[in-house]
Image (tube, rainbow, N blue to C red):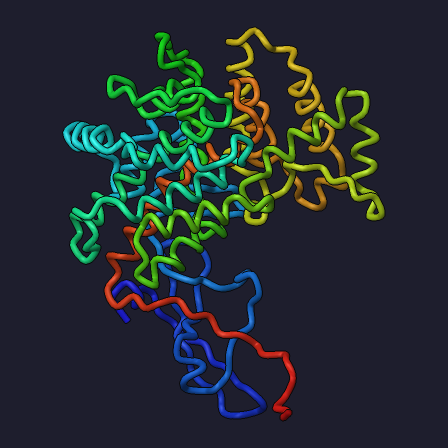
Length: 430
């Protein structure tokens, strides 16, 4: 047990079947709930804890992201998400997540230079795309291509060396926009456009997505700012399913490309990364504000399968701090595009207003989450809905790489090996 574990240590006791109570250590982090240390429980007392879905289990220690769901707080390395969204770029936030502090001018310049050095895809990697069907889902392509990166870069595969870990993590962060953009351009039969190192991260991503190789492409700075904001808001979110998957894979010693490919596969699940696409479909089904009361009534009916998507959150129980930022950004972008009367936005705004004043939603603490408006924003920026989760993966790579770096730097880290409560047949013979 290291010194960090010993901060504000108290104790608890456990008594099983009237046996003598056994002392357990209680650990307290910087903020948030304390944790009973049960690492020796099975070895010393022959009993397991049972927590399906890890609702009450801290699977690791991490200094990257802090969430207080009751208060609607999200912080990266101690900085409130609202301040980072207002004052920082995505590249700065990625540096913060990966290295623990916001970069000074020289550090940001050096990091940007490294990103620009690594943002090209190997020509043989680009050839992989021709092996996919044109109608393949972008996430299927991204899972495969990112995993294939494991076969490259023989110069930095000793991940016991900190410099090689940083190089691998930076490569992942640098290449993900090109990987996502190529999955889109390939699907529509358009040649891939190379990165432009004169542009910032988000502008570069947009020109690779929407530019044509034979035509100059001027990036709209308002849309680039909106993309940067979206990437910041989705960059990390503590021990969610995909991040936990990355850490699980990393605990085995797997290379970072394989670990992040596993994270992408998990993010692809509709219960995780596909929520904004589901919100968009719901708003299209409601169609006009006049249909909202009927939709709300259906959502309250336990016998009706209809659900209001984009409300409530597994963690946030008061409000999602990212939701208002996305809503205001969406309004700003629609004004810029002269699309203030976008029908889906009109439905979304009225639905939010009615739901927030409805006793049913208030009692159940159902508030709009980050996905409620992001689908509208992405649609009006020109993204097909099949690309929504792929954009999420680009953003979340900053967090995944940070968690991989954190785990690899942890002394004495062991392979994750959950136990189980066996409920199968007792011993039987043929």
